[in-house]
Image 1 (cartoon, one colour):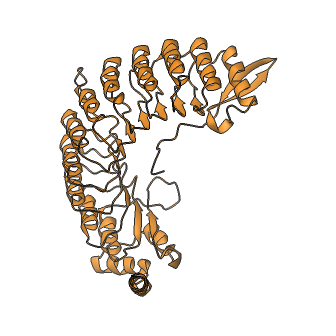
Image 2: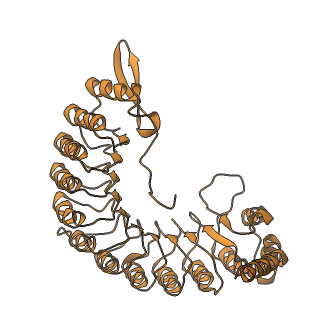
Length: 406
């Protein structure tokens, strides 16, 4: 058996070593297709050397500022998709912030359908892919068994695009991360995704932030609440900018209480107030596995902060990171959170900027930092003194965006 493995490995190495250099392949296909060479693409391909023999990630993201930079278009993707099909060692492709439309998505779908593809991550955030492109990508993933992470946030795939990915999740049992934030998903797509997640056993992280939901009944929260007790794989859920109210939080909490897997909950930029924080605190008191909660840009105020502080101090709480930035919290609420830090061995990171940081709060956080209970990397404030008074300045540290795939 060992000799067989060695023989297969040597054959694979021989194939890779014999392959045409990827930059030369790119130039040849450009010439054949009569497409102008993109200097940015060529430069990155030329950096790919034999040190990447086992695998390599190609970073062609368009969000950079450099002279002469040229964002990728569909014709660039045509060439790349043909070129990369010849290189089984490609495992990561970052094409975010370019000008890729449905046509380019079709070329990438062909790459994902290639029999020998080993691509594990594909980032297409903030391109111009719409419904048809989403349909093609979702279709290609129904038979794909290599891709682990797909990021499509910022593409306007709409209602039907959401339904296409919901259908894909019923079949694909490989994908572990799916980002569909700011994709103009609608209620039917949200319900379809929640239904698919009841049976999907591999997806670990999903982002559906800023869906276009015009109903005041928050039906999506009811469906997600019903999904959470039966889903066995999801550890990270992003529900930012959903218009979530206290009523929706109550519905969602019913499912969270019965979930034993979720560790990261993103609720930023919603309409959760003190009552919503109370529902969430009851979840934490029930030995929830939640380790990271993002409540930034809500309005939990002092009572909400006090509810959460009490829950954090309960035996069995494993919450490690909490963001309550911009929640209209003043002295009593922030002091209760400072006390929770003192009394909870689990909580290590807290972010409070954008609230009412009066001097007692400044003194409390100065003490936490001076004693080492907090480190500067674990919060977003730094104390300083003027004329004998303590103030807090902002540090540009934020709650991490992902638990996995960072």
